[in-house]
Length: 117
Image (tube, rainbow, N blue to C red; front, side, top):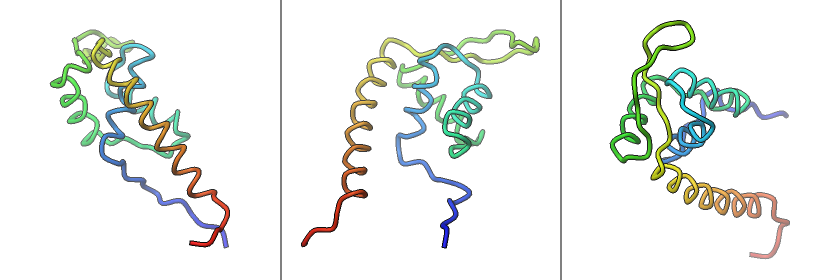
């Protein structure tokens, strides 16, 4: 029987932060574009809701990892654009290393051959 993926996947603590920082490593973006990039990059597995995104953006700004400024969007509407700071780049590099190690270890365990315990 084929297992169905859950319709909504909860983020582990800190996951949304690194997804936002990684998205902004490609260049400045407004909130809607950040959420859209995360959704498309994850092949629609991660869908960031407004109620999670904007508090995370404010938290990252308070930590000095991103900076924000007002500008006009492509549609001529006023939007708040976020960009990665030097401190944010440093934090992203550190977190990427940690996530790569975590992901590798999980893969090893989940794909391990059965052995005597």
